[in-house]
Image (cartoon, rainbow, N blue to C red):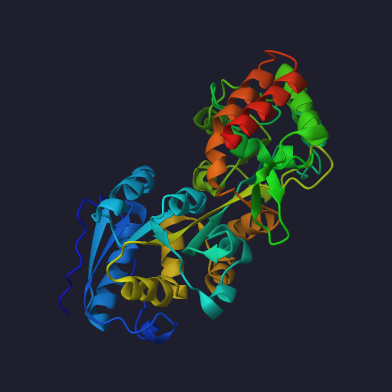
Length: 411
């Protein structure tokens, strides 16, 4: 077989998965693509798997596939810039919360999943949808949970009060240095990691509609729930439970050193924790405000350019090749993110860690993918920093944040 796909950047140590792809081309409804050319922008983590998929697609359909390796953080903005010029790719890998901006700029095309939509986790399809249309093929889901050092804390806490009390007892006994760890930024805190605690007060970002999507015209950060959360942030800051000088890297290292019973983090830190020999459990995030602590769920997937010259081939490549159990499993194995495809996700749950994070994520909500979020993040994070560091009345600071965000959204 002659392989025409090209990796246009060094892949370093990326493993190339061996995929059982034979026969997968007839598994969906992507049409009958024959001949032509596809360019795909992908990051190094996914490139090795997609090289095998592209080779199979070329053999089956005669479509030349070129993989261009880019830094993940550059893909969205480069895509928005280049698609209108006609120089952009046919397909990109990306995060679901890019979607609002992609649609707003007219650079992404809807993708008709059809019956295949039911083969994916509901939260994944919802995340890849905007204003009633689906725009991408999801391949992974991820969320944070509570990592517990079981040698220090044998029982999972139901509430933040219980967690902090356990941590303080351990500190008093000289067995721990921190009651609770979560990585924060000195200038932006971390609204993503703190969101489940905020949500437990009933303070979502935007109002959530009946179909599970967000109404970007109705900011929900304010009100009694948001103000109660702000008051609690100040109390945690004053008590040292939250510390903006403890970054994500510091929090990780201190947990690895056995200095805290609890660490609010995601699956990306689990391999290091296991390697360090920490006996751990992955638990639901304890409530602070009485309601369920619902984390944001992040979904990654693939988008088709609105200017693709070969949209039928692009759609078939995603639906019938990337959307298979073999490929979704291979992407999970190299990236560590749980598969979005239900059959692959169920198989992956043989890994207890995947199952545990999945159980927590089942209570979560997709991170907002609406363009209005661009007006939220900066004020949200800066206000959390000010409140945690007791730089003013927490309720007044929170109210000022809400007013500022509403003004920016209104334009």
